[in-house]
Length: 138
Image (cartoon, rainbow, N blue to C red; front, top):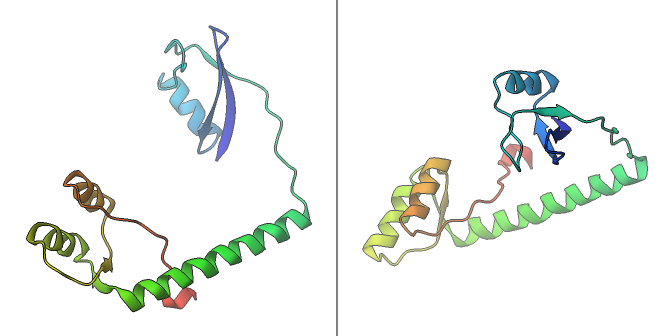
């Protein structure tokens, strides 16, 4: 990913992220990049300073933070596994069954596509997505 500072003919400046410099050029040529103020396609890249402020100490802190986050996620996973029913890929169907049939059930967890989650939300069924580590990653 690369971040560019962009400037418009109206003197508006804004930042945007691109997969790489070729992607910026491709979108620019197709006139898909527009000013956030005036919607003009007359955009140019500004000179940017690279962000190189990495030190070993800050990397060590980041590694510790990541390990602590992973540890906390694993604790949540253990709690969920102990207190909820795994319905696997039938999550959306089971959530609807509980919601519409007012079925008294143990809390559930499982897998659902982002499309299924959006449909559940549109129907007023609350869900929460959390990161999940498979056993082989633990």
